[in-house]
Length: 65
Ligand SMILES: [Zn+2]
Image 1 (cartoon, rainbow, N blue to C red):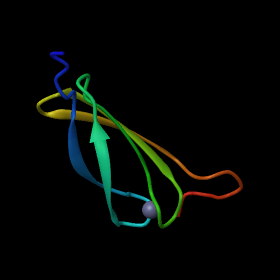
Image 2: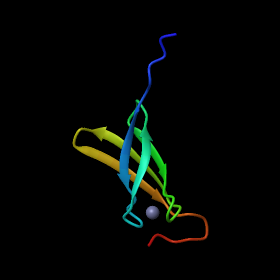
Image 3: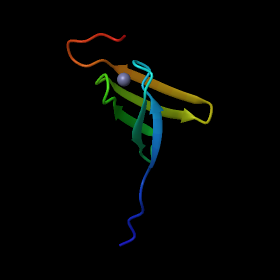
Image 4: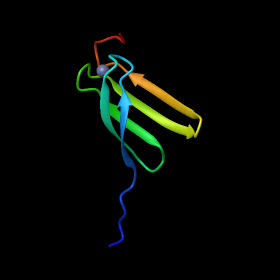
């Protein structure tokens, strides 16, 4: 017992096709999401309250729009 939920659900914007995706942010501030529309994977990391780092990967065989 005593397992508390870690992280929270967040909405992130797919910067590839500009659609909103539901994602899960863990307690370390890392968010991984896969866009259901274009299939790209976005990994974002909260560095501080004013700084967010974002990595975007296009699916295999595709390019970033
Ligand atoms: Zn997308």
